[in-house]
Amino acid sequence: MRYERLLFWAAPITLAACAVLIITLGHNTYEDRRVANCYDQAAVVIESDAQLVGAWSIAQLESKRDRSKVPIIMYGGDVAKKLIYGLNSTCWNGLVEQRDSLEQSPISLVGEFKKNAEDLRKKPIKLYGVEIPDVATVGLAGTKIQIAMSSFVQAFQIALAPIMLLWLGSLYHTRQREITSIKMSESILSVHPHVINVFPVGYYPELRRKNWFRAKAPFAWSFIFALIRMSLVAIFILPSSALYVGSLFYQPMFGYWLLNCFAGAWVFLYALGALMIEVDVGVKHFPGANALR
Image 1 (cartoon, rainbow, N blue to C red):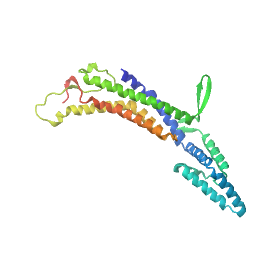
Image 2 (cartoon, rainbow, N blue to C red):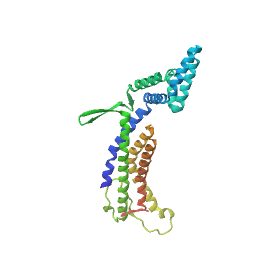
Image 3 (cartoon, rainbow, N blue to C red):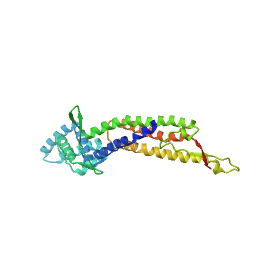
Image 4 (spheres, helix red, strand yellow):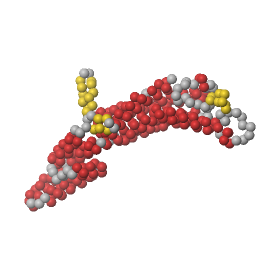
């Protein structure tokens, strides 16, 4: 009975994983949000380089002295190099398409990048007919707390990881014990009749003459029924597992990529284990009136 109750958790967990993936896709692949994120990263790159302030002052002095824009243009080239090395290629190409002038002071550049990011984020995100807000409102002790949706999704992903592992691990270990009991049972009546417990019922008559195909009938039936059971289990666990791992792939948690890989790997392994455990049944069948070969 416990295994069947665990399967019921597939619905809410799949719904939660689907919501996380949709919001993650919206905030990280929607064009406006993607460019806004790139502007934020570009602002960080400029702010972290203290040498640009001195380079801008020198370029201004040389430009006034020589009455030429060449030093300013060269300064813009230096800023471009900083951004090329500091950003990934996708972000850099996105900024190039925006045609922003880099021939400005570092303070002006940072201010412009942040303003552009803010303007882009004011536009609503619509993905698969769902409008995703920028801010999540959480009620706590009668007080409404507003959290940036991107931060809220990251926190939800972290919270969902142990839930997924606990659920998949419970499915695996519960099914392992159930299969051990099934292999020791002599009658189909002693097996709990839930949707996954599908086994061949019948008998294998003795072969009067050698026939390779009929001799392999126990293995063939075991393989077919194992595939049926694995397919049924997959209906319950694969959607939530795939959605969650997909959300990790599309979530750029800079500095936490190892945590993402670790969570995704364990969810994948436990989901695979919950499927492959059905092979452990072996050539088990239950006595019945029908001949199986």
